[in-house]
Image 1 (cartoon, rainbow, N blue to C red):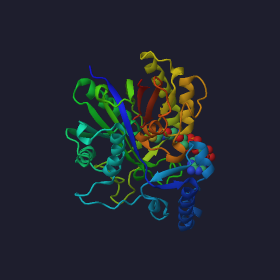
Image 2: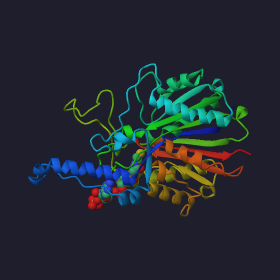
Image 3: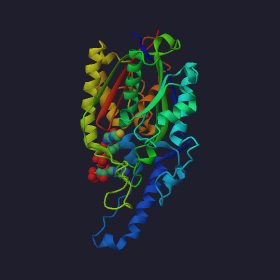
Image 4: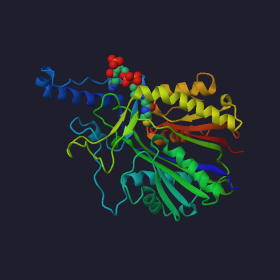
Amino acid sequence: MPRPVISATGLFTPAQTITNEELVESFNAYVARHNADNAEAIAAGEVAALEPSSVEFIEKASGIKARHVVDKANVLDPATMCPRIPERGNEELSIMAEIGVAAAREALERAGREAEDVDAVLCAASNMQRAYPAMAIEIQHALGVEGFGFDMNVACSSATFGIQTAADYIRAGNARSVLVVSPEITSGHLNWRDRDSHFIFGDVATAVLVEDAEIAPVDHWDILGTKLKTVFSNNIRNNFGFLNRTAPETRDGPDKLFVQEGRKVFKEVVPMVAAMICEEAERLGIEPASLRRLWLHQANAGMNRLIAQKVLGHEATADESPTVLDTYANTSSAGSIIAFHKHSADLAYGDIGLICSFGAGYSAGTVFVRKAT
Ligand code: COA
């Protein structure tokens, strides 16, 4: 039976960044403006005054210091506070496809692969720019890949679900080379006016080339096993959709954006993911404490610290569980792939590590990998 491996990864990072200081300055300007505009109603108890945000809180609660975005000016403008991405004509490459193609090209180049060698493209991300044609088909076309492509959305777990899907195609003999592309323009679904979550997300795109070991480059990662899990929860939601773009009362209501019960997510997801990792490691005959490195989903530094501790049996060092949260923030499904992309080259042949995602759904995915000898 064909054996799936990770041949290479690619990363596209938007050039613009927003530091916590810049973000909080803009948020607090919005709060001051809102409170001044509503001073009478606030004094009469009819409207609640908004509270300012703080740099210290953000870093302490999340580990995030900055994030990359595709449109800094409009996100930071207190009058706009969302990206304004000019609509492009149907003949132009859409922005999601554009950043996905950039990440995919890097993965292909690192693998020494041409587009015509690829059999399928999966666009696995937490939001799609449109319903159809699929983003994956646009990316496939822009790259010059024959075969097929489709979109899949499992929120923050999209990339690991994509890797298992690609691995299954290879095992079944339906494809030999599959690109899993995760363009995440999370700035579009974040409510930049919400103090509880305005600091969480950043924009990025990643790509993972999953291939049959027989055709893979010498330097690759064996996929030892993958496991997926979903458990329904209302604690992270994005209700935007073609039937409910805005609040139902009025077409002019606020757009439906990301909402979460952060504390509940923290409490419920940490034990679920730690148990899942340990069970799957046992099934594969891997001692969890022997894992050389954990490339965890990048949502919150505290969550990662706890999960790593439960898995490894001790407080993980930055070498054992690297973070990219400080500069990228939460990039949804791309987070664990960025960590893997940036922090895997130094591992020795034979080292075993884990790529792990978790998030809305709830959803979680594990991909145990070994640096091929
Ligand atoms: N600036 C200053 N203070 C803030 C603030 C901000 N931007 N946002 C909230 N606070 C305050 C709250 O008002 C609250 O004050 P109170 O205790 O006086 O009521 C306090 O800080 C704690 O707020 P809370 O929301 O409970 O913070 P937290 O420590 O739980 O951290 C998260 C919030 C979201 C960072 C954290 O819960 C988390 O990361 N959860 C998991 C989220 C996640 O991974 N989601 C997945 C998305 S894919």
